[in-house]
Amino acid sequence: MPHAPVLVPGVASERLADVAARWWSMRPDGRIECRLCPRLCKLQDGQRGFCFVRQRAGSGMVLTTYGRSSGFCIDPIEKKPLNHFFPGTSVLSFGTVGCNLGCRFCQNWDISKAREADRLSEAATPDRIADSALRLGCRSVAFTYNDPVVFAEYAIDVAQACRERGIATVAVTAGYITAEARPEFYRAMDAANVDLKAFTEDFYRRLCFAELQPVLDTLVYLRRETNVWFEVTTLLIPGENDSTEELDRASDWFAANLGPDVPWHFSAFHPDFRMLDIPPTPSATLLRAREIARSKGLRHVYTGNVRDREGGSTWCPSCGALLIGRDGYELNGYNLDGGRCRACGCEIAGRFEPRPGTWGARCQPVRLG
Image 1 (tube, one colour):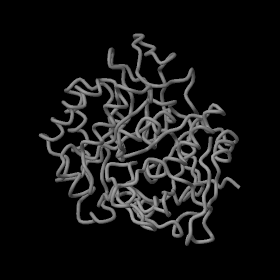
Image 2 (tube, rainbow, N blue to C red; image 1 turned 180 degrees about the vertical axis):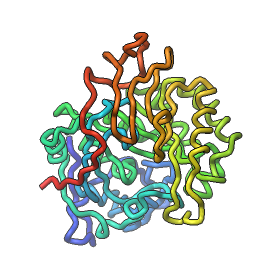
Image 3 (tube, one colour; image 1 turned 90 degrees about the horizontal axis):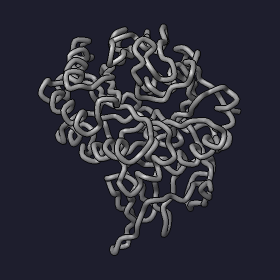
Image 4 (cartoon, one colour; image 1 turned 135 degrees about the horizontal axis):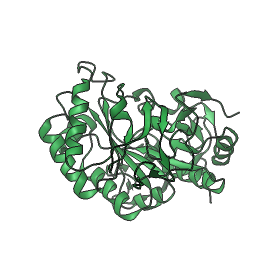
């Protein structure tokens, strides 16, 4: 059942009615505690959380961005990045505004740090999004650009509408969510790409204003408690999270807790937002990270934000044959048969259809009206 809208005193008239929010409790001191993410923001009447889009209204809490988007685009699924989830297909991508992390290197800061009136433009109900995805021939819908955890009620309703029409849904997220909210959020999703931003608490505190452990808890939960297909992305920032020692420890943890078949993407940093003084990631750093992870037995390790045919393609972990050739987001070879290597029959972890999609590398902005 879609979440019911409620009117909030003082809300600007140009915005759609806000929606009652979930995952909060009343504290003995009269403040409301948001229990959606590990920040556990404590709010007086009218106050907003760190994410800016969840607000106390009287004796309750509301999501102020329900039904509004910062824009829609049809992307290749490989851009999310997901390399083992219906390769070659198109995904209808959208987000809202706000974020529950404060990453100084945010690559989408103009959306994640925006206020509603700055960026929210197109109104879209869950049914409208699902119907549009079907009409546009998209295999899935992705909640991306900003973290869908902060608009969880909206994302869940869209996911339910998509599921009714046979459309898959993808959460592109930092995984910063409480154990209380985690089950319902991921129960609605078919796939996820989770950012593992680093492998030290110091990095998360200094550069994300967050904590590492809840992210690790989310990854373990996805692996052990759900059927959600997920892949992991780490943006390597020179001098911050790219040391051989850190990558070695992270790879050990990854292998022990997530297993050999979960794909891991190492992406190149480019200077942005509040880290304009850091140089771009050298290609050699990505190659070193990939080799370290593969040396721990991880079978599907990728490089991103660079042109690297070997690091961007999927290879059979058994016989070494090329399974899915990629040039950027473009597929240029496909040697899977029912999710198995055509050369040796090895079963490859992922979600594969009999034939790959043919969307290509296009990124096509669309309006739903």
